[in-house]
Image: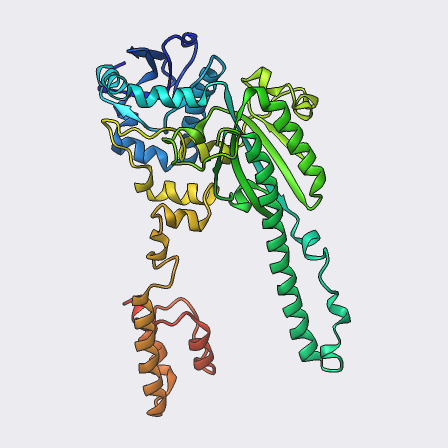
Length: 270
Length: 154
């Protein structure tokens, strides 16, 4: 590679784990390799500063197509490693000047990184989104506005009363959807070690209708995956106005913050 | 229930997920889901080359649209659109508009015709592109975006 370069970090894995696949390529199409130090392995790639320097990267990141390719490449490396054992994913665009600096990082923060690896080992992140059908919820129990006699004979009043009733039905529907989402979360959190909440996604770009009332990740022990999946299916039946979407398995992206930084789970230990 | 299967890596983890297996093949993971995790999650380590993803305005627009709700964006300190006059009526524009309207009212109250004002406001001379509607100068003036000081100058 010509020109100045940097070391891009993808993930941390135990040095005792399976090796980095030889054909794995990273964000710059570069071969991915390992930097090892005191029992830890950082999986890295060498990227040209001509494309990944601060200024250059800023320019590239404004191009959504470039961003998508790079983000998917970063994700692919992490996902591939996750097949082989525990992995701590690094935030996109974490770079050091060279491998020596990466080795120093591993030595300095060994205890912290080992604790994180321990916490995610044998566990998988599953994403659950819940969508509420606003229409069904709004018509599930409130009074029929047509029977409201208050505005009879007075069209203006009747109209306003109807509008008020609609607004009230909408609020009730929101409340009911939130309650159902909380009930769903309580069951799933009980089976997971930890829960992480994500903000609802933009309806237009994520292409969904209705309300996204839940967008959570759960860190589930592999021994409990089947039970977790069965619980999702059963909740989907129990709440007909809520549609559940189950995605994963994910490397534990949402569970890499130090203990306490993400929501404590409702699992047996917590 | 919908099951969106990533390129499944934990074969044993999928044992319980019969709906996913029914499909026979793994769907590529949804971009919004990937962005949400790759850009916003994962362990944060201050590297040697500091890339503050949140400094990048256009990127934040796109990510805000794709991933984050407005509230979450504000929480992350991304609120530049609230200061962008093209996206929110900037206060400067309001002041200008107010001054222009006051001037206009003063002129009307003083009994001046609107013809002069229309010409002055748009800076239009003989070279203007639109034919002048001599009989309806006021409606034309009202129907347009107020010209004030912002019209093209000769």
